Image (cartoon, rainbow, N blue to C red):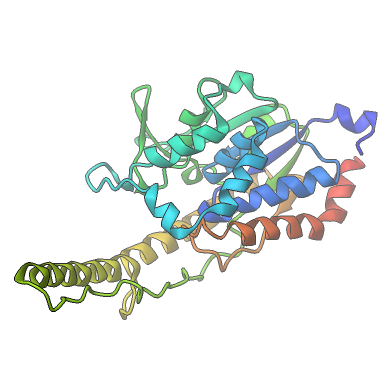
Length: 313
């Protein structure tokens, strides 16, 4: 438990970007709470903004239950393709669903201070959200280039906060944090490839022995499945000698986030860095929450001595 001296010190928690690896933020917050560490200030970038919003709205348990129940088929249902809208996914279905957990709250109504980072697509500047609708800020912050369409906000197009500030330590300090615990999800991701899923479940339809229409329908289904497999191969690099579009995009994002994170934290180092080991988890494997949350808890345990020393300051 924190004594009176420690309770006067404002602790900040900077939750970094990292797509599906971000579910480990849930385990980290739980592990910190069990140590008696309850951050006064939370800043988040991308997936860190989403988890941070749920935490500061006292909805983390609900979000955890939802993430643990996710399957790949359910994730597909939330995708609303928009090839002409600046990204593969509009994201409105997903954010609309998550909003039912975070609720239509404003920053001013949260239990703790929250700051969210997004990036101005035109200028490259980082944009800090501290007031107004929480989910609007989160929607901007999770707009991963090429995947989620940008958000138009007050005359600007906003994209993922991880482009400018993957682990927003600076925002935590600007909000008044005396000590900052940073969660870096990008510490061990370079050179790692996404797990390749077997697409053998997509079996072509078989034409029956019935009437002509049945045979025509069966042939059409078979043709569509063949085209689907070809598209999947081009996007995800399945059974090909060259990486697919998705592999290239994911690996490029990994490189970018690693380099920016190193640079930003060198200039504004946190007091403690938590870096869960999640290199095996792919960018969009949101259905692996059990693994990510468990690793978040393990990382808190590994860093317990440093965290205890932090509380003694």
